[in-house]
Image (tube, rainbow, N blue to C red; front, side):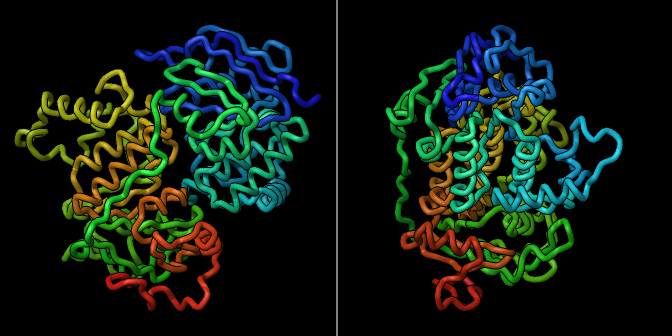
Length: 520
């Protein structure tokens, strides 16, 4: 295969869903030996277009050509036979099976006898090569969302796809791992592979892509070489206006303590230590950012605080009430809101409409309820108001949330949790998968809650976001806090080393050396 030849050509692709024109006569082409970025706001049609290319959807109109031959893609298997593989934003994994079994699932060979030990060795080799550490014998239900995404990437690498579509592949990687992945992508393109990268991180587009196609409302706005544009130009094409890349964070005088964690210990789903004497506190008007590579205790920490997981020892206090191992409902009554990392599995009920999902916390209270009965008119008005306020792209309030794009799923959760006006907001990856306009909006919402006196526990793998929004930054590695830093003095390089398990020079056990009064 010669570098630079067109390997994919999509002509006049149109795809309709009930009430939505997702793709409107789109022309798109990608070449061998290039990373081609696909940009656009949530609901712009990026994932739909790539789902068509990978065989998950069939277009209503248009044609697809792969290496000059017209391709009729009736299923993902057809696409895989032609060397097209996609790592989806919402994972295609079987929870009760192991990592190795998921990677083998659907392969035509071997037909009768699986050599799982050989498969596991290959997976371990790929894991080390690409910096995507995951145990091949672990069951999917035991893995964090970040670890599950690594399995999806490994699955495509294991199958040797020549045309690889990556939907937000770096959302759960540390900066050093991102560089490692990019080095791998560069080696692949040097060998003639085609990489299509769906991302909202404009710095990544400029760093790795040779060309970028921007979609808006289901149409192609432009395809340009990255050498002929910049981040502001791309953002302007995406949303049709200028974007503020750094939100203004006002000075807020901290108030009384809202959350205190004292020597928290907890197990993960494998029965192993996930949290090891984690201690910190957050006051009114503060954001504490938790940085770390996925799988180092972030999920368990959020679940212990919100009542979804039992602590084996230690204490959690919200305000002046101890909530250690209380039920989620009791924690909610203490005005705690939670944005979980697993949107569909924990945050929402996929088959219920938007209106039902946004009242899950308040359906017992007036005006949403009249005694034991739901007030349908008030619920509809409440849901419609949140759709407008949070700019949720949906035909109406009765739309099942499973039909929404990833970004609009996140907006639905944010609408429910922030509208509850919490004293404590536990936010896990609140902008993961959101476009740059929606990211700007969500970050402003978090800062507005801070300015109104709420305490925010922000868990994110986006270090730029952590530094921009947080007042203090705690770094988790192996279930332990490596240190707590003042965000105004923190450096990405320092945080990256701590994420890899390197404590700051001269640092004692962080729980014994609080950087300020109130942090233990």
